[in-house]
Length: 281
Image 1: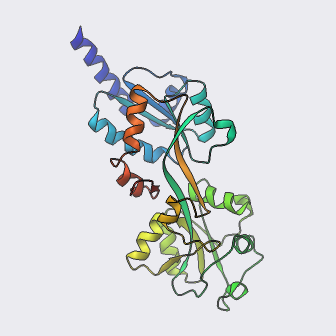
Image 2 (image 1 turned 90 degrees about the vertical axis):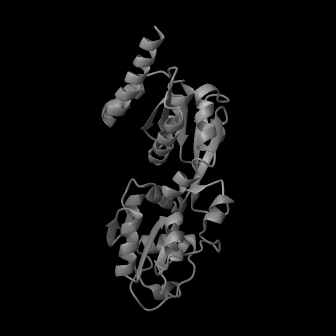
Image 3 (image 1 turned 180 degrees about the vertical axis):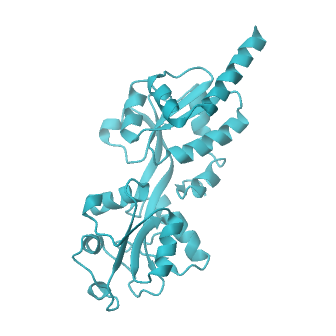
């Protein structure tokens, strides 16, 4: 009997890994948490990171199946409250209405505004950024730079950096005027090197690493606060948000085990690799 049970569990784990992502999402939406399995639902921003943590967790706990489904922070909160998931993922600050949930942040997401190193502009206010991205300011001379047209660039809609940036500016993505829409951080750095008069926003972690490696870019202070992982971690930098795991009550069992793993030094490297800022040094 014991051998048959173990075989069934292993078969279920293998099945979860083989089922296509869209089918797994449907299964997750209908399933209740089950013994030997952790279901994690919520923020699409966090889903790739939490999936990577889950793979490392399973290497330590091969008897446990972990399913991560990116459905958005609102769904993560709702499913956690309804008991439809073991753990929810939320990539925004929790409100007073969320105080009924147990929450533990695993890292922070931060966005830097980046210029070419040779651009003499050293800082921009939130108001100046809004004016640049809505077309009211079109020349660097208007904000203390050279008499050169500003080459505005944006990241693709739906990316976490775009969501966070427009939230900080208090505008809609559709209101931003852009001469180029680019993809990941590497594409944004490439654009900056090709267009020294450009402005773009990107992950603080990647901008820091690139600048330290000698790439001629500079993350700008915002409202006088340096764009650094340190200031993301201590909560001072304004373009940032927490990445939080939530449960319906104090976590126990497998949920507690996974959250403890996700907030330990075991996950620090993965958080950095996904261009987020860990709370652990």
